[in-house]
Length: 253
Length: 268
Image (cartoon, rainbow over all chains, first blue to last red):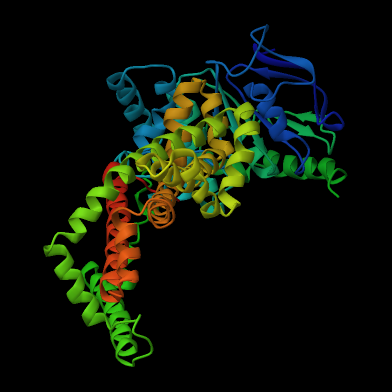
């Protein structure tokens, strides 16, 4: 069994005293693996991710990182946003450096680190561009670089590729896998796409409809060591997509 | 990751659609010319002696510049206007930002601001005479009453309109309260704050003219009233045009200042 870096224990979230968004979510996230949280819209996927990020306080239960309960956001987690959450008045470089600036890192230091990650996500030459001058894919690369600069062990991604077109999504997925071969990160990834979950994740957590609770956990065990282009052709991939769809179908109205 | 060069979108230049910059100036001048032409024709139609043609007003305007009438009037009006503007701008922005940031202040300041914004404030101005007498203080108060609510309300709305996703982002990266205000909230509110400042400055000009018409017969307001009494309608209109010009130039200058201070301002 792998090392467990993050654990949720009986996490529940109740909004406005009566709306139950999440119920009894107990989940183990293994170190260095990619965990996908998959479910129909409105099932509380993003809520669960925000609880893990420390942005929403759970009504019941706890989130533990290395057996220590979390209180709010921490240096061990960095978030990538669905809508990119880039400052429109700041350049790519300034946006990427935001996390380090918030930590009080000196300008020279944070620019050096940021330039490094800008290069790593493939945005060299665009350091001085503003978000409105970038395509959707490039904006999300900026968001990803910002999350990488703070060097957290856990990367939290909230439907990061849902706002870009299909071709770009595939490219970003492939690039993410390539990047994770270099960066040793634990990734928790929210998605509504079965294909994306199976393609990327080592562990797929399927949430049932409202209130969200864990319906099933699937381990794709897909060979990602070889050519990543071939992943989608593996019989195991096709089988799993079908299997998860038949399991999810009952929760979709 | 691979080279994303092929996704790069060249920013489009909006002004291209409407013509070049010098063209724009030409159109603006043309709009003035048309108004002046219609005015000239209407003035010559002899509708009323209180409505002189534009050419007469223009002559009066130039003569008033050189005979010192404008200088004397503006020397009276400008000091209270400047003091009032400073209080309006600084006070308005501070009040607006504080009620935007601190919920508890919202409860007791907002109702006052909304009353001042919606009430016919000019009706209150004669009352100022009772309180402050015929003085510059009365003028300053009139300016602040008319201008400050606009500045404060816009600053407040600008702060409130900060994208919640950006606030969440700042929180997730554990930015301090101070950093969040400085790097997220204020830049995001900047456009609204400046829009409020322009509204506030217009309000301040209305305030000074109203105060000088209704309370203290001095300065530029007096120049209007006096010329009306003695039936120098060309001079009366020339004075009104001078106020429009000063107000217009001030507002234009503020736009330039905003572009100068925030050249990188780019919104999606």
